[in-house]
Length: 638
Ligand code: MIC
Ligand code: SF4
Figure (cartoon, rainbow, N blue to C red):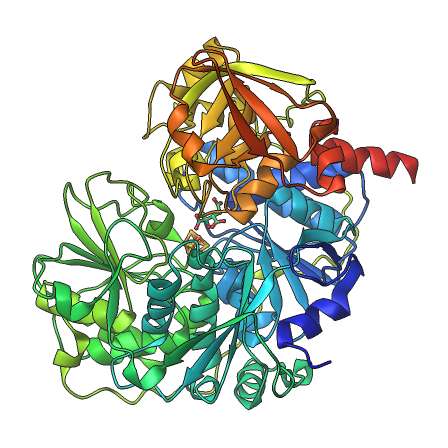
């Protein structure tokens, strides 16, 4: 039978289950990746599993998110990560080396391999034909310990690309076009597989941009074929020997197909406050702009920044705009410097930031009150920039430069001639990696802010409590637990970080939850979209949250809830959402964790049917009080 490309790679890594849509499958993981803000917890969890050395082909630890060492806490986290990597055989990418996804693509991504990363934009590596999936830190820790990664077999959606992009239109516009069609939940439980004659017109970094932001559709991952373009990319990185050809079989059937004629795509922009709120740049042209930020794991490749340099050459940015540039990696920065492109960027008036996530996760560069900020990033949830009243738009580097020059949202085609950007022979230098060669003999150094993981008992048979908070659709993990350097420096201290749960949605939440002995959360569609941060499950659990009842859940957050013993329940009849209010007392028998359960609304005297759509493996984890307890128990038996 003919197969899609995704099915071929999955089949080669299948260790459990049947590859039928909706079935639970277990996959063997070749590479893992962590970053600092999810990594500290992932390694604390890995340590708790008691495995002496990682069992993957390659495990990598990056430091790229929280780089502001305002006090000892963040610096201690970085030191812990370096020690723990040396001890367990993990390659450590030092602070300053760049953003995990960009670097993994440059130096490690391999066609036909699997990658599990504790960051939701891990699918970037799909740009070279990897199955690369984002997950919570605990799932990544288990993969490092040699456990399979379990997921629901997604359906494979084809995205057919034809034609070629016009000048001033780039990969970001393509994925914004896909987001416009699919919305932030159209990709849930799907793999987006790109095919068609348009694929060969896109370079690997462009494919990386598209695969990266497939995450915003809710997709499990995105994948591109591995072809001659991939081969040229790998050979530019000195890795040609790692190339293999990969593509779908001829005439294969996808569960559905989305068509994109690249020649018809025009410059697009996502308006505040959601990545799927997409319009043409022309529709919002003329809006005054205060800040422009170029970078992030979506658009910080050498190709992106050389285009930016060529467009800025000989120009000055508007007096009203602050333009920041965060190169994706040290390799990008070094090559920009060596070719002289960096000079063109600096002369135009840009502020050069560290090679890191930076403003994307609210670490510095918060916009002014009510500011309009145009960013080449992938997320524009309200408040994520650090300023609640800011209006954040997402656009291509071309649109970002045009807007910085004119001081208002500008269609980049107004800039005249499109510069021909050619990539030089790359300078490749791995000195900012620490490869774990010698056996580690020292002690792992832990600062005082690194607290042991809390232990949770098995869940009781009966859950009772108040609805602590009722929310609408598309609640993001940024809403549940904000980013920013202040909160992120508490990522290894669960008691402290818990005080920030729902901080900007309802500042009294944490106190109320503790006072009431925990309770329930009610949400709408796509609850928990966005980041993979497991703190968004672990911190509410610490405050006593017992169950979340929602219309639907985002994939990674659902897994995180189960991993930490919070029961995720879906309304059978979505109309019942209206019949629950904040403050209502609920009661629920969960004994046996059956699929169909009934929640009693004691306050209203009504009953609500809910569904617990979990595999037997997930149910036994829930019963045990979470995944860590379950993995530890399994290790004890071995
Ligand atoms: C994000 O983009 O929200 C992050 C920060 O990269 C997160 C991870 C985190 O919260 O540490 C992600 O996307 O998974
Ligand atoms: Fe970093 Fe932003 Fe990418 Fe998340 S989305 S990994 S914060 S650059």
